[in-house]
Length: 309
Ligand code: DGY
Image 1 (cartoon, rainbow, N blue to C red):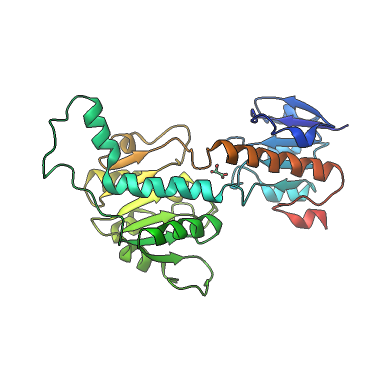
Image 2: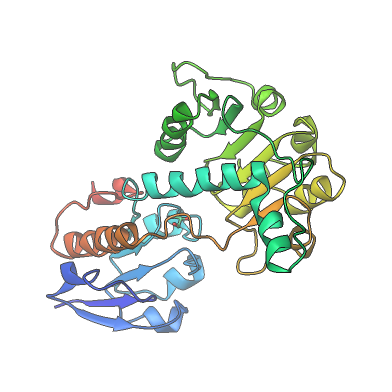
């Protein structure tokens, strides 16, 4: 029986794959806390860096209950022959649903309209009230065309949108735009679907926001730091773009104060994958990965498979 450290509460059934093991709940991953663990199940809010891993003498596997793993120093884990696993695949459709909800909400600025109604400020229907931007027929620019980006593209088909996409490597698919600047300038709605890496940090900065149409909408369900939040807040306050739909932030759970007060900002608290079925699937994928590694089996989604070779 191995000792598995768990830093978060999993939905009922999420721990089933670990029935044979001792599961210990701890709220943090400080080095001292994981010295006795054989495995770690954590989330994107846990920083698993080289210092933490240095204290993990027995650790064989880290399973992140998330598809993004920018919270983990994978190189440091690999150097210690610790397998790192994530949860791709099971959350694509749910996250794409939420991205599309933000496309719609930001384009029609539904948060501001609802706030007016709730505050008692609504004076009845008027022809000129709160004109938004149409989503149907608009040009959608996807930055990143992995599983989630492609799932958003499928939804866009139903809205008769023209879909462009950019990724580091040519996809060979219709709508591929090699130059990100060109996509930023051409799209009515830009939606971000790239992981956070040293190359994508502040990929959407003041200059690229400046390339967007004044009528454009930016949607981010990827990672907060892909966007320069200060530049985005400035653009919204100055009316340089029409709106933004944001689910992720650079310093979660804090939200840039100028973004909180920005006109046209629809702000959600990182709920992209938050459906009952998807959160259970993520939990089970992570705990199954731990069970597999502990049993000497190949887990389904190692991010550093070379460690298993
Ligand atoms: C992930 O899995 O990386 C998401 O951000 C959380 O759903």
